[in-house]
Length: 294
Image (cartoon, one colour):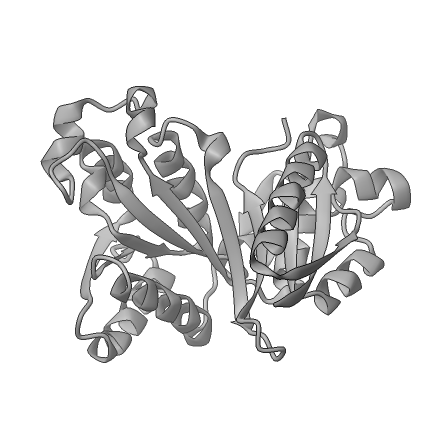
């Protein structure tokens, strides 16, 4: 396989981890006869310092011309006073949106050698474990390009009142849930859609879409859970979860909570996927560690 990979080291520890990841990919290429071409670009604080923008045009165009993106990290205290549209994190959000990377896959697995680093007792882990051992293995799918992070926002009343808007279309929810159903079908066959349907209209639409898709996946057991209950259940019985699908905001919070249970957030990967590539190499994807830039 030949592939062109955009390399976005970013800020902080980002350049260090992407350099090591590149070594690993070079080893894979040599072992299995692949050919990877890496093209470096600026993003985040590094791009701000060099060009005054967190996502330069050449970075966006370059990533669009590549088959995949390998990303490090963005942000740091030195850019905390930047305007909201100039913050390093805005570069990553804008890149995800521009590339149509709507499905964020965040696995959270407790590896047995890291058991002692997990803050939960054996009894809590074993009670819900899929194999009666003190472990868990879940996949959280977070919608990435819609919801409150991309809705209308602003200030009024001389800046003393602020608002953000949560909005989802049927199509935005459907494409994320199809990825979630497919993932569950290839795992243990359990999908939990997490929402706040008792108070949010957008969450009620999530449930409607999930129920519409359910007949097409007879091997998947579909459940629903309120987000506040899910936050508690992750601590009480994490082994009950196989695949979780949820909105941008809820997924952002829950995936970080789940990652803290694995013992080391620094070892967990993340993949942000878009539509199928026209080049025959699967979905367009951005791959990154989930830790920050520190």
